[in-house]
Length: 271
Length: 99
Image 1 (cartoon, rainbow over the protein chains, first blue to last red):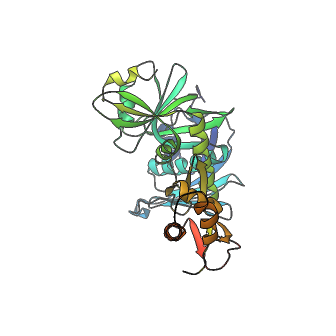
Image 2 (spheres, chains in turn green, yellow):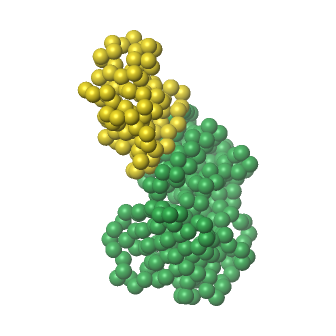
Image 3 (cartoon, each protein chain N blue to C red):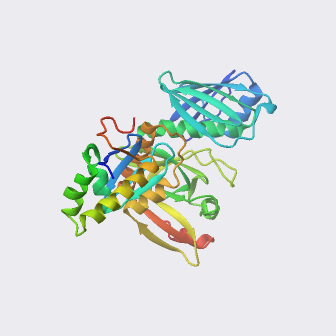
């Protein structure tokens, strides 16, 4: 949470995102330092962790060119695979293993998947969106690659606290939805601020000749949201959880189309 | 065509929204939107009621459409949904659809 400081332990480091602390164990002090640097602002100095992962570093030649992520659940154990990593995680024991190369982006991918699985149980999700807090409320700007997520982040005024330019973290609590800062970044190449705020609305991005906001309701809102959800698992129970969350979300949070000219004037509409 | 029985696949998520129904396949996360008529058939697809009976009681009784036309359209719809893996069709009643 806000204000935490980074503390190196002998063989592990705790990374806390969205209030979910995950302890990462590794024999390599060098790699642990890399993790601390990569997740600066999200490294928890306390010893408490809800989940533990052992990281085994594989030689660089262990990487294959397979870029497809495969996530499956077998008898309660999740398996996550891509060419550069293979991870297993058992929610019942709260323990897992990751075999990967030294590339920190492999760990980034595993953490994104684990958080989608954890969030689904709580009614939350990760969304392809940049997000920022302004006047105590969070604004999410969603779209596919090239839609303008990072552009909106770059154009943000000084009074806006940037939560991410790439992957927004949405949690459900107290009957509402909150956006939480994440270390998951895109072209901006810097982590978001470790803050949270209730979500004012989701803006589906489109570039156009002038700035305008239009409401999106019903099935169109669900479709727009679902198109941008991070969705790895093919497990029927998981699919139903995420699907239900999307419906509940659009019932409670406004979804709008934001057509914008890529200059600072667009933020005059975001108040 | 023989008597057809239709059922919703269990490996899906579905929610009604107004007169439409949104269905997501767990197999590939594809999202489908069923219109009003398709939603009526979807709701009635319990695996034990023949499609012909669904069309007669739920479609022809509510909408101005000839029975043979409605049945032909319904058969095309359920075959399409079955091809996409979100519905199961059989010439026998379906006790455990989608398993």
